[in-house]
Image (cartoon, rainbow, N blue to C red; front, side, top):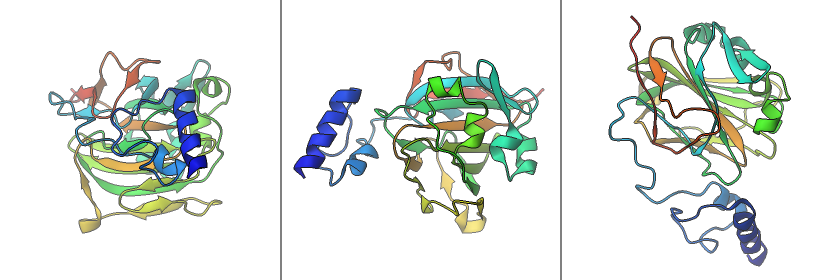
Length: 256
């Protein structure tokens, strides 16, 4: 316990972690460092934007990039982009649904709260685990590694919403031991091949905007995809800007 407490205290000091909204006492309330890393926040700490009937941030993090998907190409960093087909890999039919759509890529640093929440009201319809690399997903790495987010291990969660299909993609990174969802638990899949789950009827669980959908360890990235003509990002959703769970990041925009 002394080692665990010391590790937590040093991590907080090293990364300047904000523990004001943490639900349990720090460090005594946590049995392990990992418990602290995926810490829960106090109820009401991340209220969903009352004026937003649309898309809210799924995580606490820093915007890497956000904008329009040009055909099937998603911007990664200066000099680098990647395709929807590469990102979604086994779901070529799903990839077509997001052509010319909108994307937002948000990076979670080690000091961030590491639970992932629903950006919009909807029902989970499918999930796809894709094995891959575990490169760092920091800004510096994104500028150096071509197709980074389409190469790393990731879990793609598909939702049906009033605005159409939505994808929330949890991208693994260096030191990420596992990804968990609230409906499935720990998701590892087969490390050498994609694993698919489909949900219908009672299994197609409904999530309100701001509800927790999953979590992962250490720094990583979440990507949100929306279909063409359905969502316009807020002006503050620019590279380097910080966002929090529940903060409005986009509003509905009907095609035509």
